Length: 260
Ligand code: NAI
Image (cartoon, rainbow, N blue to C red):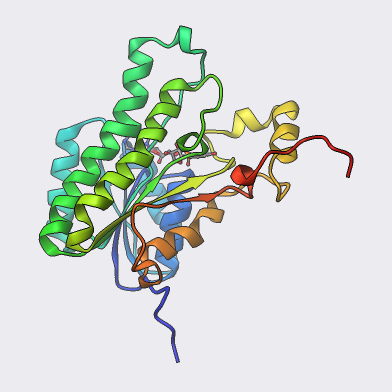
C-alpha cells in the first residue's frame, strides 16, 4: 500500500527564489517526490543552470520574476497559470539581507530589504492567493526566520521584515481559511547558504552558533525539505497560520555555560 498522507506527487509547485540556497533545496525535494516545479528569481541564466541540475523527476520549469517588481509578479502568475494550470503550492523563499547597525541603515537599504522580503512576498502571496481562493484550494509556505521570533543584532530591516512575515502568515491564514487555502511558514535556523557563508566562516560566529544550537550543527538547505513537504501535503490538512521553527533547537531555550 502506498501511503498518500505526505504525497505531493502531481502538484504544481512555484518556488520563488528557487535558483539557489534554501529555495533550490526545497525545489529539489518537490521534484524528487513527483511535483511539477517552477522556479523563479531575478536571473534567467542561474535559473536555467539550476533547472538543468535538478534531475530525477518532471523537468523543472523557470520564469524570471523579480519580487521587487509588482508588474513582474502579476505577469508571472498569469503566465504560469496559463502554461501549467493552477498552482497547488507556493513557496515564498526570495529574500535578502544587509547587515549593519540601525543608525547606519539608509533609506535605500531599508527599501531594498523590505521591498523584497515583505512587500514582494505579500504581493506574490496575494496574486497567487487570489487564484487559490477562486479555486477554493491551495497551500502557501512562507520562509520566515529566527528574526520572526526575536531580532538578531544589526539586521533591523531584515528582522522587521521577517517578523512582519509571521503576521502576514497568520493574517492570510485567517482570511483564506474559509476558502480552503492554507498559509504556513518555516523559520530556518542558521543555514549554510550563499547568503550566510561568509558570516559562518568566522570561527567566533561558528563557535557561538554551535554552542547555542542544541543539535550542535549549522543547518543545511536540505534540512528544510521535510517541513516543506509536510506543509504542502495532506498531512498538514488541518494546519494554517503556523510557523514551524526548523532550527536544530535554537529557539527551544537558552544555552548557558553551566558545567555539564
Ligand atoms: P540565497 O541568497 O542563497 O538565495 C536567495 C534566493 O532568492 C535566490 O534564489 C535569489 O536569486 C532569490 N532572490 C533574491 N532577491 C530576489 C528578488 N528580488 N526577486 C526574486 N528572487 C530573488 O539565500 P538563502 O540563504 O537560501 O535564503 C533564502 C530565504 O531563506 C530568504 O528569505 C532568507 O531570508 C531565508 N532564511 C535564510 C536563512 C539562512 O541561514 N540562510 C535563515 C533564515 C531564513
